[in-house]
Structure formats: C-alpha cells, structure tokens
Length: 454
Figure (tube, rainbow, N blue to C red):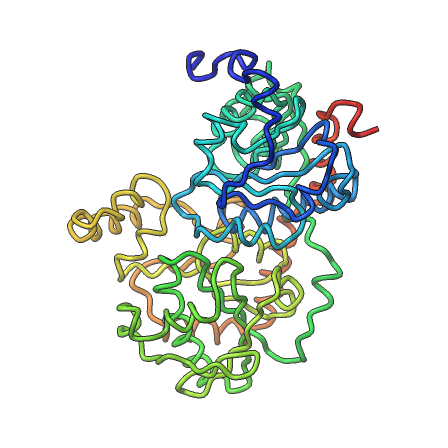
C-alpha cells in the first residue's frame, strides 16, 4: 500500500502548476461566480460522492449546513474558502449527478466522475487548487478519497455507516453509530466521533408542509437508475391500477428522481421498453401535473426534489431497493420493498461482481438465472431499515412477484392502519437523534486551517 500512496509533497508539484487559470474543460461545471472572483480562496472543502441517493441524503444537507456555518464560495464570492464537489466512478450512477448538483447552487465547482482520474494525474488542469483543504468522503469507494487527499495534500475525513476501510489515512473519522466505531482498531478510535445518522436530520418543516390534499396517498418509487426503471415503472403502474380497483379511494404520487425525467418515465412505460410488454398497464398520458394510465388511474407527479413533505403525508410506499429506503425510513413512511427477479435486467442494478457479470452481453443469459437463484438463497436484508435493525422492520418482497400480489398486500396494510402505525413507530425509533449533519460540519471546520474560518 505504501507504493499506492506516494509522498504528497512529491506528488503535488510546483505551486505554479496549481495556480493555472480555471479550466475550460466542458465536462467541468463551474458556478457562474467562480471566474468573477479576482482573489483565489486560501482553502477549499471537497465533498466526494457517487450516486443520486448519496447526493440527496448526505451531500446536499452537509453542503447546506457548511454554508450556514461558514462563509463559503459560491454563495459568498469573496469568502476565503470554497466548497467543491467531486463525483467518483460508480457503476450505478446515472450520469446526471453533476447536472443535478450544479442546479443546487451550493458548489463553486462540480467535477463529474469522468474527470476523476485526470484530476489525480493533472490537478492543475482543473485548478487552481489552494494549498490547504479538506477532502470529505460521502459515498463511493473510500480509497478514492485516500488517493485524492494524498494527491492534493489535503486533510481527510471519512463518514462511514458500517466500516472504515483506511483509518490510518484519515485525520478524522465520523461514524454513524457505535457498531462502526467498535470495528475500529483501538489505536484509531481516538480519531473517531460518532456523529449519528445523517438521515435523521430531514427537516420537520418539509415533512409538515406537504401541499397534498387529504386522502389515502400511496407513493410509488420505481428507482432512479435505468436498470431499475425498466422494471419498476411498468410494474408499479400495473400495481397502482390493481390497487385502485381494490380501493377506489386510493390516490397515488410518484416522485420524479432528479436524475431522470417525465419523458423517460413515459418511455419506460411504452413499447420502447421490452419489459413493458409483460405488464398489463399501457403507456400513460401526461395530464396536468400527473399521469393517467389506460385504466384511468391518476398518478400525481412530484417534480420538486427532495419531495420529503408530500412523501411524509403518504400512508404507504411501494419502492425498489436503494438509498430511497433510507430516506423513506427517516421520514417514518411505511413501505413494501420490491425486487422482481423474473427479468434479468434487474441484475444490472446490483452492486459487486454479480452486477458486473450481469452487464456482459454473453454472460447475462447464461448466468442470470443461476446468479439470481444463488443471490436469493444467500441474501441478507436489502432495505436500509432492515439492515440497520438486523431484523425485518419493513417487508421485502423478492422473487417472481406480480403487481397483483403487491396490490393485494398493499390493500391489506391499508385495511389495518394500526399495523401501519406500528411500522411507522418502528421506523422512527431507528432514526436516532437529529444533529448528525451539524456534528459532521463541525468536524470539517475543525480540519480547516485557522485563517479561512476566522
């Protein structure tokens, strides 16, 4: 490992290579005010992340808190410190993360994942980079931030849910809970602070101000990645039709992930999606702020992100696996987690070596069935609340499930509000105390040099 991490001083090169003019690389998204600042910042904070779930639930809250705590560019163009976002390679990323993050107006510069390796090789090409800074890990492979902090000569902080991979190369460590802290070797525990779950800080005001009229609302969350949307959109549209037939008063909302669009959702429900032909629902029509299925079911679209307010007012959610289960759990929203395995495309949404094999055209058909059978036989919990609790807090339905089966189960839950209330209480008990975002921001500030935070 010592060869993988050269001496940062030797790697950084001369000062002049880091003080080149701002890059004009079209892949790099700079805030409009970045070029207008005549005086370069003395320090910078670089948040490192990967997929859409981490961006919305970890990166955005921390960035907002850092702006509240410190004068930072781009919101304060003359501040001595800037805030930047670096996206790292991730097989489950959508490719839209940089565009979404740019729209928040929180970052002086957003570097897409495709520039990560070039940044390590030639940081001056994406410069200038201040001599001092902090790199914060918020998703992806923890080793990427080890490399980046060594390359730039910056201090390093990792936020870890379950395990810290490289404690020896972290100046500070922030863990979600005591389980992750106990996994640290005794000699590294002095660097660690248990800050709590970043998801516990979802704004109470957002949850209360929903904008939804009264009703029995059910949320449909088909996912944010292509592999999940291919199955999730037609599956959930049919499930909504069948649930509406069982409970005519039921109403539906569908949050549109920032990394997709209504046009893409319509395409996934059309004959252009080969999976759609296996479901009875047909391509819905856009009508006002929602969709109307061929069976007449109205589905209201939520195009404001994050949609915590409307979601918190729902009785139940039908959702795919992923970071959205953590978000729903933090909102205390009862859910049924769905993993239909009858279509091999769903394998492409999985992480690790199975997902990589399933992406190979020749191996997909040969290995898909075997991998699915093996994965289902040896799987642990898939939904975040169940992983966190180590028990089945929310139901996970994995296998050759059908929309009619899920509609029947959803109707049964809605018929028993006391069971939904018990699940909601169980989810809330897992959230932990608010304050994790503020605690993590305080650690970041602690690692900055005195000048930029004075």
